[in-house]
Amino acid sequence: MAQWQVFRAGVQVHPLGFVPTMGALHRGHLSLLEASKERNAFTVVSVFINPKQFDDNGDFVAYPVDCQKDLEQLEKASADVVLLPDARQIYADDYRFKVTESEFSQQLCGAHRPGHFDGVLTVVMRLLNLVQPDNAYFGEKDYQQLQLIRNMVAAFFMPVNIVACATVREADGLAMSSRNQRLDARQRKKAAVLYAALKQSKSAEQARATLQQQGFEVEYVEDIADRRLAATRLGNTRLIDNVQL
Ligand code: PAF
Figure 1: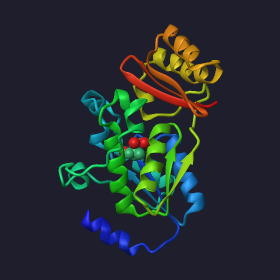
Figure 2: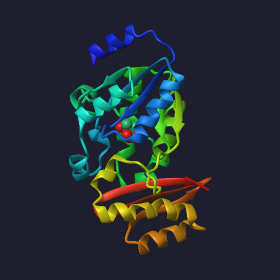
Figure 3: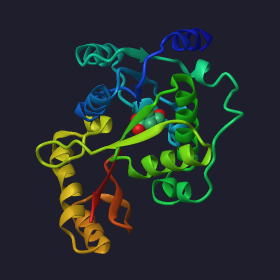
Figure 4: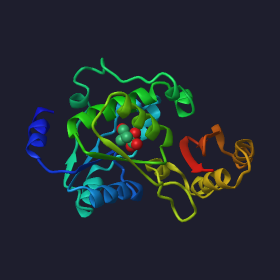
């Protein structure tokens, strides 16, 4: 990463925006890039499928990869620079050093995906240190991730502003996600029920019951403060979403 650090030291532009991604870009990612371009003089996008945040190797292996298409989209959307590191560069220490949060990261998605948020926080810390942005952009779809990143940045006095961007949805309400590509036609149709159930149910319990009736395997539906959050599975595909109450 030394080469990158030399390059970064030469970029004396402010404000600098950063959009970290795991590739397989869709309109949700592009909305983060647009938000960054609106407010920053220079935008860096990273594409790195972080192996350390997959608790399930099958999910890692099946994660969609299309680097060529990602780069074409980023060029078209005028990203200034794309950072494409590989795992040996990011984890030259063999992941001996990591960021661990011991409370909120154990709940919701963390309760079902051991080690997931350690992987997320560790890679985000490393990427923020490499890119040194003024502003970094994250989607509200991964709501728990967003809160944990905000908390980490505050806890470690990191000089970056975390900007949350609204979830981008398909016409039927399904939140955009790279994993949606893995749904077959029947599952894709059904997937729209997730958002509708979260929004329309009177309680988390009612949303859970609707989802189960419709054939979703429900990991959790919980109301926390002003948010209703859920994680479900349709076949082998894990779908998460959240709405404001
Ligand atoms: O939200 C994601 O795509 C990832 O969790 C992130 C923030 C890029 C870290 O790998």
